[in-house]
Length: 563
Image (cartoon, rainbow, N blue to C red; front, top):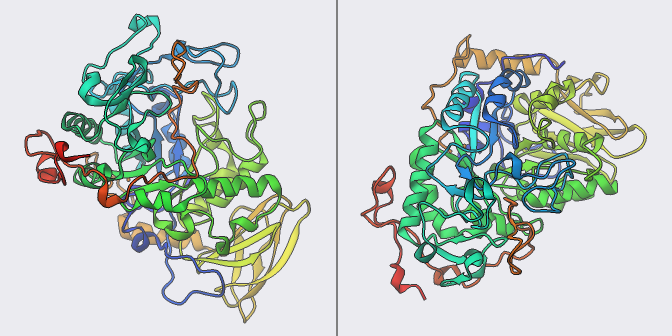
């Protein structure tokens, strides 16, 4: 296995993300026992691969690798010009602008991340490359039927304390002024109106934009419109938990609908699924941090009980259509990863889980080159991506929910199993197939056959996985895809967008993680007052640009009525 394949039309799959995912991809409310009544969905689900510290030209030179691996989409860093360049980052043996700071991956990942302290949201000539290079990359990815998700920063702008080159030690923001465009700028000692600390207080001492201000809203509209005009298919909202939900609901998400952009938010809360759901309900998907925390702990502690459907850990169990799953990302390390220990078998096992479970998985590897294409040369990862994009659809059915071995079915499509046991383990389970030959599409287990009652014995290797489905299942799906989309599987046109996808060391009140683009983990959803009492958001009729007509009249209350 691991060979190149035709597969379903990948950009059509990603376009199905969001409200219509259940119809197109077969995701539904999870069930825990027995077979599920109703039609069986087939065809698989999308896979997102994350690049981080890799320049646009280098990514473009490796698009063939992404295509060969079957990746559905790539997530790229925030494109607007930022405060820091390569010379300002801490690497393996050198300090950066923020002395003493390193990433959670140690020296393997440069730190702080470039791009997440934006200076001018209109200028896309940044550290990772020029605007024209980004546009060329997007066109090349589209030529290979791969979607593009660009990161965005709406919560804050760069801390004015800056490197001497090219800023002279302190920078300004060409689009904004301290007052009235920010609620707080700690570097200048400025503090405006704080309506709710969760949304108006600075994150990591970064200047906090006032999203109730119409000029800020207009800048964000131009920013997102520029991203869409470059051909992006979706956006990620950095630090979404620190932006007013009403702003997403009444301004940003309607604009993204108008622009044809799928979107996913970073709500870094590893415990409260309801906090994530609050933002999902505004019209976005969300990274499933509760599932990530549970998965990491399950593998490190050798107990998979928390992953079972009955345990209900994660957005993937309550709203699987909206869950973007991951085993690690640029901010959070995977199981058993340490600053001095790179990814190994534990991360591979975690990836096998998310590449067979409900949700839209995204993959990441640390290192300035390793988060490039190298991991995608791995045949085992090829096979798992193929399983996800071809077979992992349908409702979730727990077949054997043990502490060390977890077997689950994606109704009528895939029987998957993972193990944290030190020896191989065999279990007889029910399935949706009667007298059917099943093959492991990752070549970890022998072929098996279900009996007349649909039962079969499955053996899972030690600290490994199996992915069983009927013989020729992938070939049947590929033939069906060819029949529907044409023999040559024409790539979508460039304008066919998805209609769904630091510290300031001279200030004592600023965090030492000032440049970290992450949202802060919290087990409190910080609702503040009831939603009915919170300020509303929208655009007045005087704002120009794409989306202005759509959003005109969306304002719920005027600025001067906010108390």
